Image 1 (cartoon, helix red, strand yellow):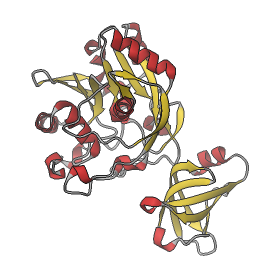
Image 2 (image 1 turned 90 degrees about the vertical axis):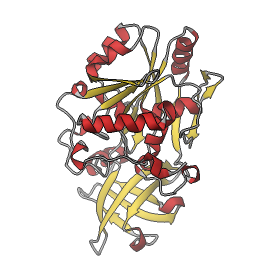
Image 3 (image 1 turned 60 degrees about the vertical axis):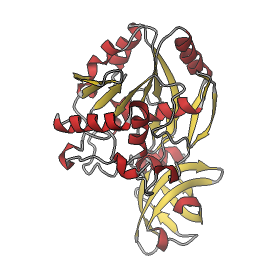
Length: 339
């Protein structure tokens, strides 16, 4: 299948640059796969599409201030470091300008709480980076680091918490699971009061989520690997809902990837590890019955996953409808519920 099959026209002004004042004030496009019917609703209406006995699966990962801007000690040259994952000794990171940062380069930051040493070359052009700091590293990172907003967001974010879900708990991600940004505590309370179970899992979102597919044939694309954890209490809730005839509704493509990784004969097993599962049309879903998601970039692996669930032609038609109706796209944009 061609990567070009997942192209669509998107006017640049529809790329949302900032979140709405209220999280649940975004729009909700509801797609019924059974007949292709489309409804245009408000996100707060989502409760009316959930049934008692359903299980909503959310990713409670939390974004860390992983973008660091400093300068080379001595010369003052600008350096940018994006943390990717912790290592036994240091961090795996993306650094700029990588070609001009030999092993041993010292980097300083303001305020002067943190220092870095650029280390060995790793896979995919990444580097090992070791840090030293005055006091606790995590405290220093909070003072020095910035939230790594997506590259298509060009305006500064006034409230950093708006790039976190209200249920974010497990630190480590460099991008938010954006389908969850629409929920408020009050809306989650309404959902649970309606007899819908909320199960919490964790997938640490890496920078690969923004990387385009650069091959002509999607089967040749190598998916990035991300760490996950599926605790026993979440498994019990998910499998109980499945056994009672409820639907498993993944909040976001990150939750969907974890569920499909840990599915076994329709049930979910507990565990933790890494997944590089690549879901594209032709894939048969084993665990996910419905998906809540945002509108994704053209030719992205996220769009391919959505097309695998609902069909490529139908999803491209839906995206064209969303453009016509002036929906807001990408991380701070509107949402789609696929039933």
